[in-house]
Amino acid sequence: MFYDAMRCDGVGPVEAIVLCYAVRTWGPWWDASAGVRASRPVPPPAGEAEIARFRSAAEKAVAELGEDAAIEELEARMSENDRRYVPPELMWDERSEL
Image (tube, rainbow, N blue to C red):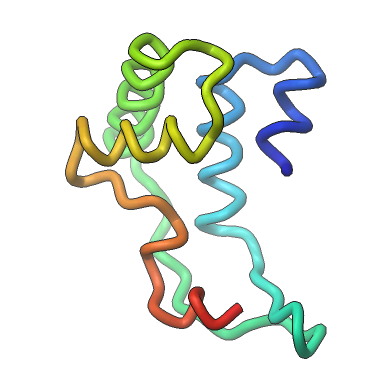
């Protein structure tokens, strides 16, 4: 929803996916069924090289799939193009329980 809202507000697809990834990776998670903040490991902050690599993967995915591609399609393509990119939903086993 966050990605779609940014796109509707005029944010470009690369910037939107980078921001969405950052929020989903480093932002808090909530257990919707219990209404409480979920416990999960927080990855270390991204370095400049990691951010540049991620932005490059996002740019390539947008170039290949087009600006109107869904975030799920873009993330899947980014993972195919760069095996170091892991979509946030696959980072933590406990996330599947949320």
